[in-house]
Image 1 (cartoon, one colour):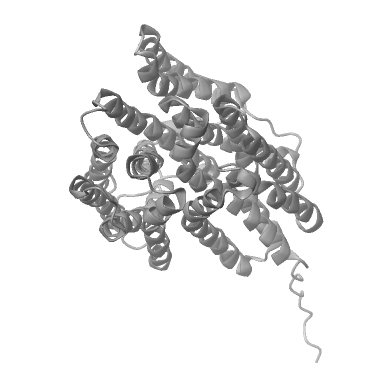
Image 2 (image 1 turned 60 degrees about the vertical axis):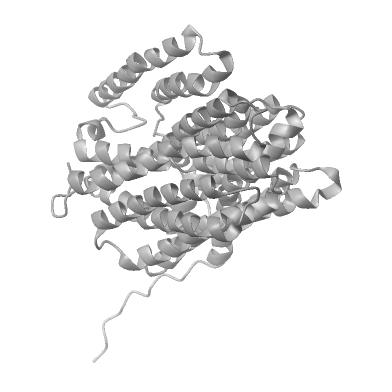
Length: 484
């Protein structure tokens, strides 16, 4: 008796791990650039004789443009093809990096950072979307895990690599190699992508919501611009007028989304998400959590280098326990999966709040020199807290969404995360630099002035983290989380 014929399993795609390597290299280049810049900020300020607001824009402009670019870039990948958008994104990011490294003025540098961020936003959504075209379902888990590992390694490597490159003063270029190093990496990534990454065809029938993007960007800029520039300008009337104008523009954005939904037009954000109260609360908490991170590293780098004269490498090594803590907690969080999500978010946020309080006491007790062993424990605790909270927070927020809106909700959540980071840079920078400006430069040594400024600035993120720790168990009670 003959056996029934069976359908053979599809053969694995040749070169899929080479293609995966290309995606990881590009993603690593983008992620490391976010962390590597922090250790260079004091040197940039001295090299360009830049104002405090200009230094804030080096960080905030990148974060804000990256946030606004994520959603439309994901849709553009659906329209034009994933590989094409990925290659364009890497190319634009590489060009932006070259312009950053060659920037003659601080204004040129900020403009180049905007171009960098646009490239990063173009390539980032494509990396995860290309994986299903490369791997069978049974291999995808391992492939996605590599993205998490590369993100952790980027966080750990960035400050140290940045400090090392600046310290070497290659060809007398100072801080510029932290950007120029992306040029050969980007060129190799583009050529390798064209050779090994398969094309994922797009659909020309899809459309993007460009008016919605413009309205959202205007609303955000109306708030962030005066927060960063207001102190430098002496808080003129137009700063408050801009912030007030952001309210009707935000209302216009909501009205536009509802109009697009009624007409069946493209939406940068699904209007149905606006009616989902748990999702909105969760995204608000996500923005609050991430508002306390980039601003913190900005003021910490200035405190260590300008206040105590540490080199960029010494500064990067001092902050290293934080990303190591994030990496360790992320590995453990992956093993826990979906268990005890609400408790892990609250615990992680509490760790972060306690770490900031501990760090504040450490700074106040620090004399004329930085002792690494005293800073390492609170920074490691903060990293453990962030790594503990991130994964369950994203899982919990997205569990409130039904299947048809999951993609839109996920993209919006990542964008809101970046928006929160931009707000945090503006708020913590305002507190930090206002305190420096109000201090009597002749009354104390620089390290005491910077200590006073940073201890006041981190009161903001301490309060933010502890607020999350208290609110999460109330807003997301176990057993009551679900769509809508």
